[in-house]
Length: 461
Ligand code: PLP
Image (tube, rainbow, N blue to C red; front, side):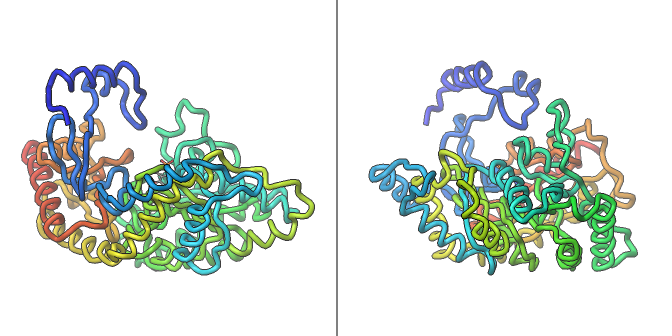
């Protein structure tokens, strides 16, 4: 690594001169420049200035097995030497993607039937929209095309997935959403659930609203409902008790498919293999990415269940071919990375560790900053924790967003050598560390978060 400051400056200027950064304020970036990461090991990431951070975000909720896993590097190396690429169009195949398909189905809940790979969560959700449309056309229901998403959902940024995403910043000036997308009320136990209402009643209320929406649109026009088991980017919002059971009863009643977007929750993050397993969801389609390869190489998967496959198979003789897929669907090196990644998750029981360390993380955060004047709520499941900051704990009054309070905590985090992330909606700090965290790592993260929150609270006094 080069710690020469002049070298850094050159790189920073080069970055500003040539890169357009995703989900970044262009004005801030041009004023402040990038933070350039150079290397990583275990749960730590080091930047080009030599700062070694505990990565409380696992990159972008994705490095589930942590950094520097030689097994993944070696598996990819070997695959790159043997067969760096071949496509999967027109019945072509390769061993790692076949073995990965088998592994994914073994991990998935019962009834899931076939896997089609992509490169990221967004393209997988676009694939899912097309699968819903294709399925309903094949079974003679060409009007059943609307897809219901939820307020504040994040499902990616491509044209279809970006339409399912329901936050203004991802729509404005991009001419989104597509006309077939609808939104229903989201789960929010901190701000939306009336204090005197039980969780099961809140679930009934939300499912009732979904039913009203389906009825007002006309059930014959509604093809699918999509949800993240725990909503991530929208604020780390777990569902109230019984939510998915109530919702599934409504979907079953009107023959509406359930798409579980497991991009964040999948592969252990909640302390179960998938959010679907954790909450008893019966998905028709699952979106997977991130933890599938722990981000070592880009990879996603759309997984369909028996019911959808049965229609595809039955109508196949009348169809020329399944006209969908990408050059990199079933990329052998990415599949090799994912296989090695899942082997690590299994061998080290990282799903069990996520449950244990996640519970510890939440408990310790509550013990250390639960009484902070600016902490309104500490929530989440497993290794997916959110911290909502408020101006007034009693009334839950939010800070003026222009103060960027969560951003201030994130910036203090850099000084305290921890990485946590602010989310685009409200003052929420997200924590989603690698599933390989030890107790000692949890304590270090909690200490860093506490120091950062305390510093911002003090500055507001
Ligand atoms: N779905 C969910 C739930 C996500 O959190 C994300 C990304 O954060 C996506 C989809 C999009 O994935 P990608 O950024 O790989 O396109």
